[in-house]
Image 1 (cartoon, rainbow, N blue to C red):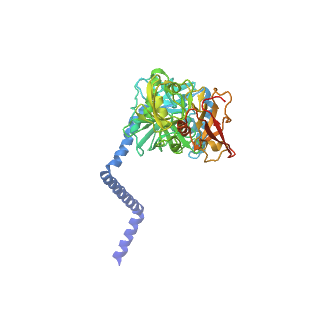
Image 2 (image 1 turned 135 degrees about the vertical axis):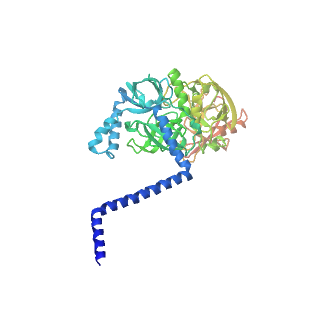
Image 3 (image 1 turned 90 degrees about the vertical axis):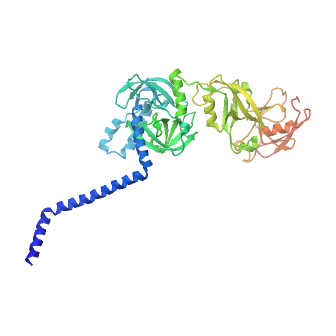
Length: 501
């Protein structure tokens, strides 16, 4: 009994004096065991899935290689000071939810208004960025990764692609390598480097969400062929690079989708490097971009056009207007021609067509493969120099209708929806009369803006169908045209081809 008493007493004394410490050591030992087990599990996972850790290592290497070639651009003055204030207020609202109020002003001082990013692409000091970063500014300063700062001069700008080249005089620069953006595929890992909200040398990552994006609402850029990514890109990233895991620049970050607060909503748009380097080299050598010019207004081919124009698929571009005395006009291109190819390159859509023509040289001769009245026609055209216009390539008088020689009038096919806008039933198709030729002293009883829906009793939905019917009409035979009015009433008129009343 005495032995038991003394044993309990000793244990109590030891526990009172060292119990807490023993529990702490025991807890640390358990934690160390868990950490060790986790480390061993990670090591095992690394052995089993080496590609996962290879990607992580690739991210680190790309960041290490890319950051010296990415610059922070500060701009001031000029016509955009009001925009600077609006941007600063958007940033203030965004940061207010993340940063304590007493630290907010300190952070805002670190986020200067009017800032962006740039890519060193030549050791002589040439830097590629967005036009909207530097356009109309009085002063431009470039901050390198090692915090050296230099004043920059604008070498050239191209609003149609939102690209610009500026230059600094600085030693020991690290230009980045531009890669092949055509090699990108949806799902590829990509990395963005820039100065979002003025936070210089920020690295984010994501994947290629889509390629070939065009006609993006709210993006005022004429040539759109964007790479879409979910990498975190925000105000201040503009002009910075999007890189592949080889450390090559595959795009120039230029626009984001937002919820109206100017902050990235998980969708960003990047100018492909293959387009960017062509523009950058021209700006570097001559200070401007010289593009080929055809002189038409092209529109996409829609599914509803296939039957009307006798097309096999919704490819090519439809000529909606032809600029008078333009290269297209001189070559004989007509309204409602469908351009199917340029030289040996098939036309797949509007954005590709515009980029293809723009990449050709002024005065270059090309062959157009055209579908006209359901028959293929080959035309040769010498391109002109595209006028310096931000939105529309070319201006001046245009033809938006075709000459129907047998009838002595100008007309055009009305596509789906156009007649409905003019008060006709939605399913109506026909040939819209634009004007009569001057050879008529007293034109037949059909006026401009009326619609021909049949010729000699045969329905016609388009100019090609009308011309097809007219081929079978003897030269001196009168032609009966059925005219449809918005009220739904029809009337028939008879005219003698190319004659006078």
